[in-house]
Length: 391
Image 1 (cartoon, rainbow, N blue to C red):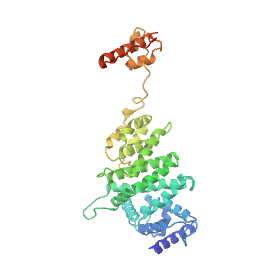
Image 2 (tube, rainbow, N blue to C red):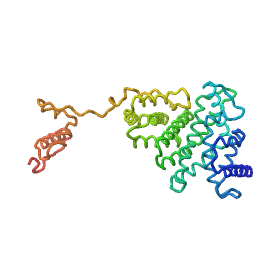
Image 3 (cartoon, rainbow, N blue to C red):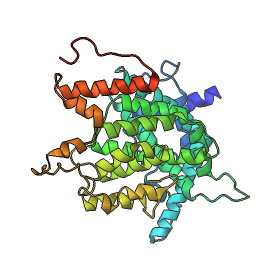
């Protein structure tokens, strides 16, 4: 087995070096004659290799990085129609069906070859080095976020997978189970990405959207269990980080929709509801409509999945929660001149009166005497005011 993996590693190293480390997913599929299972087996061998192994080139880490970039491109829709034998009708339904079949094949290949765990281990090791300032200056962090997006695109297929007696575990369901099995490692990867700091707005949108999809899948996978996984905990960290830091003066509607879905999926909507409402209140009507469309999109690849009560998430983007209704409290009305006693009706009672009264006020002295007399009558406490207490 070791010799087979070494052969696969050397073979792909030759391919990547011959093409100058700039290899797309399409080129790799062509190299594997559009055999996704063969390609994933080759990639698994490459990712199982370690720098310093005998017979492998010195630029193994660079080759593995380029291979990860290509791997994350395997979910591109055009690859579903690029193989010589692929055909589909002109209708959107026929094209979506062909894409579903292709992505199911990718799900099966990634799980059955062991590529899922091998790729995750390589990215996690590189991302940890990047987070510690010992890596490639952020490239591995971007690849980590890309791998999360790749997994998210595949696990969405589980939403419409058909379970039958003949096939109780279709490839997307099997992939979701594999995702749940590696949830703690996925959480470590997300923590490393967060430790490296925020990227561009587009990267933030992609990361939060991917985490929303993955967290919904994990919530469905652990529906019968009460234990929480590492990825769910890391998603809560991502959610709170985004909410505390804010999203700038013009928040992205899609990011807010993804954060709301993420909060529901990790069972944190109650805690985050007030802050989410505050940020969503700044959206214009078109922004609210765009956010709602991403939450109710008819195509699963364009929809932000919500596990549980999706209606409550949608209510956050209702028009009634506009800036006018969720604005800061208005200034108090001017105090009428004919009502000088309004001061005594302010909240706070005795504590407010004592806090605002001058220290030498006789009113304070009388109130304190009355208070301690009540204590004496109730508890039998003997007390006399100290010398000079009344001035």
